[in-house]
Length: 510
Image (cartoon, rainbow, N blue to C red):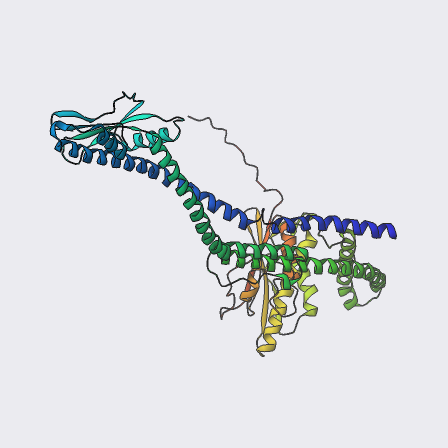
């Protein structure tokens, strides 16, 4: 006993462990959907800032160089006002220092002049002509400045604002430009980081409210429902949202309701199967005793007894055989059909004889099956199909007669052959099948049209027909004169299609 208890505890612990791990993983912030959403938002905003930064830093470089050219152009205008463009060395150095240039040259019309130059010759490392530079080339030159790795002396040529064909030419150190660009980059980076977290926080809060929290609620409900799917109190209550989240909640609720109902039905069927097995065991013994007594009835020399005794014995044989099959298959699983060819009208007569004693006198049973209709099927299965369909019609008619006194009911059996298939029709002039019962008409405990009914009759008939490769279906209603009633068709195909042998002609083809 202790070993069994320890095994049960071990199994329960093992089953609970994966669920506990799932819960812990879902609540960890660094693995949660919220954290991933925040990180991805920051990443994408930063990526957008990078895409903005590239043309921005290129534009900063271009603006910086154009400012230097503008200052140099102004200085050149001052020099042009001096006599013979001559200025003292001290003033020259001061002007070059203010312009941030080592040398300044200008072109006015067709005349080019070197306005200011130092006493020492300067070696130029790189030339940039801003007049013909494209956007792509400007971006490449910008990154060339950032990653040059050393301080260079550059020559820059740009259009002068004083004339259409004029230009200004300066020689400058690249170090101040590089320093200004690095400072600008750090400012942009700082602003981008602040902006990224600000935008990401706003996006995170909005998405967390509209998406993450509802998804977390759905996930938590799924875990809770999976612990006990038969508990209907664990079914999710959907919100009033009309978007995809709302649709998911409503579909999850429908799925949980259907699953809970299916599991409850399975439990009910399991309990019913156990009860049927117990009842069948005792009932078989009772029927065996009744069969022994009925055998002696044949010895009585009475016409009435001799007429009904064979039918009574046949009914008892069917009941005993069915009880034995129920015990053999445990869950009342139907055995495979033992097919044979027989005239259907005889079995229809037996079904009517078995049903008539339990039928109201206000209901008439008709056998409209032609005498020459032969069927390839299990005789016992066809008998059960007909009795179940007839009892279903009789129950509907009896309820209708109670509600409408004076109404006479009819149940008719008809059949015909359609190629290699026999179609059996069972009709009545009752109230018909209720709309709510049609969707699950052939499902046990689901398709009953009356209160308290089980719906087993139609479910058994459909199962027996499927075992033959056939089907049972509700056809268009309105069999009675007033448009009411129900019409069921049972289709039973032959085991092998009968093809008659033919004789080939003997005349040679011309």
